[in-house]
Length: 425
Image (cartoon, rainbow, N blue to C red; front, side, top):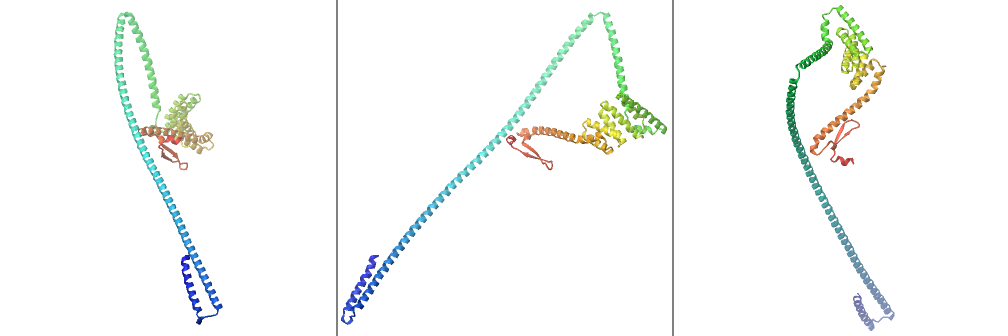
């Protein structure tokens, strides 16, 4: 830069020398002050030019330094950017590698799970096959055992039969020998005693059979139906019907007397005879007789027949409170709780102040519910046993099926559980 600035300066000095030579000519001489002023001006201009050139050089140098500094900054920025890009690429590569490793681990885990599932399925298949083989072996052993037991029983039966026949033959021979050895007189006496005992036993047995047959025939004669009585009454006059009603009334009073004395069998017989005589057209009288006979049969522990008599009494007189109450009590004793509850409700409709019916209507609903729950539990237990019997060949049980009841609707939903034992922990 200094070398370039010196060349113009030399040219200016040469021009000044030429000018001085020019002014030295006599034709062009001017006063010295003017020349000094011009020289001073030229010198100032030269200095100013030099200064401007120096400033321009400094400015150029500054610009070049700035350019160099900018280039260095750009290079640094580019270097940083490249480093960041390299770091980003490296991080992406590391992340990609890590994702690939995780994916590989996941694939390996899935493969292991599939292998484990296949192995479990094979084990379950083997277990099912083993169970089936065990069942077949058990059945075969059971059949062989039964065949062996049957064979042993047959052999034992045959052996016992042979021993029995041998013993019989031996006893017969001994008896024959003893018989031959006995005296004829003793034989006659024994024969007479035997004949007497046989006659006595025969007479007692004959009497007992006749009594049993008589009682059975009497009972069969006393049992009747309304149709046969109605057909028989069609042939009777009004006087005969009234006479029969009076006779049945007398028999009813006799039955009441036996009943009060605790003679239940006689009371039942009197009520039955009264029913045989009382005309069918007298419904209320017959209803009372059926109810009274039901009371007698209750004491004889003939509850089913007593319930039947109460039903016939109610059929003849639907508003007969005593018969309804008696049938309700009998049905409750025989655990027919629903029927008993209906009879008690009917009694309260006819007689709202009946204390026994009120108490029963408050007591029976709870008993009916408890009975139904018990029956439900028994039924569920039987169904569970049946389900286990069906599911066992498949390696399952009813424990694999959970039953949940909806509190609002009361319906049930069934959910399958693979490992019920693990869920219970």
